[in-house]
Image 1: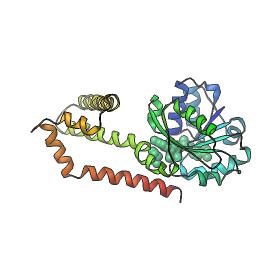
Image 2: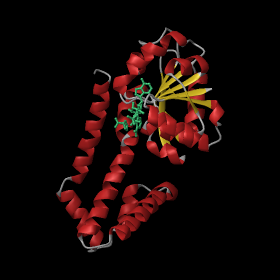
Image 3: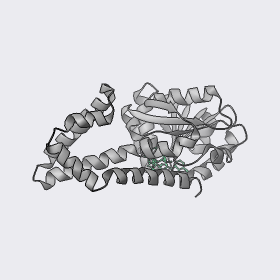
Image 4: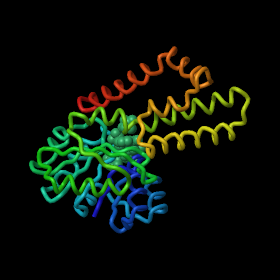
Length: 264
Ligand SMILES: NC(=O)C1=CN([C@@H]2O[C@H](COP(=O)(O)OP(=O)(O)OC[C@H]3O[C@@H](n4cnc5c(N)ncnc54)[C@H](O)[C@@H]3O)[C@@H](O)[C@H]2O)C=CC1
Ligand SMILES: O=C(O)[C@@H]1CCC=N1
């Protein structure tokens, strides 16, 4: 039995992804304190919602998807019900396995995972790393579970804050670009619905090229950039405005914020 504790944006994406990939509603318990949202979840997915302590008593695998700021109080609440036979998987940004383990009985296995919201469509990217009491079988279990909603990569925990900044937050960067391109089209007088279609299909087409061609992004970009043409003119403006540096700084800021969340 799996318990998802905290079914907000990420928890619900994982819930929906798992159910779409063959887990049955009877396999999954959900803890969600917002009563109205819990009611919606029961209606939408046919799952049972229970208090966190009941979820800890009944499930063997706990997927914790609360905000980092709420996580430690929750661990203190459920810790009396958790032992070595459980597996605790936290998707919280920043919280290290050392911090999570310090709120649990010694020996409880903890996996730190960083998924992203495309898990909802079965296209997630999740990185996982184990803690002090995690054995290979625990990582296998976490990988199998999260592998139902996309790709899973094992990384050393020292890389987790960078993972968070790249693939955890990453979808938001692409949505930001999409939004900006749509607004540019609208500003030039194009109907919004047309701009949205152009941007949406261009983005998924570009992603398919990246995924399917095996080429480095530089090669793909060069193929679009005709000599003396429109793309070269656009790219020159992006470089002039320091967009490359802005992205690097943004990803560093996300990495630093992830690190800081463990200390707050
Ligand atoms: N949103 C994203 O794209 C990603 C989020 N994460 C991580 O997932 C976690 C949740 O983030 P979001 O879903 O964005 O936030 P959110 O605010 O949408 O969801 C948090 C959920 O936890 C619930 N909650 C609060 N206190 C609780 C308690 N004591 N017991 C059970 N549930 C409780 C809230 O009602 C809410 O539904 C964070 O730790 C975040 O770092 C990780 C990867 C990606
Ligand atoms: O913004 C956040 O803190 C979370 C973690 C990665 C994506 N969303």
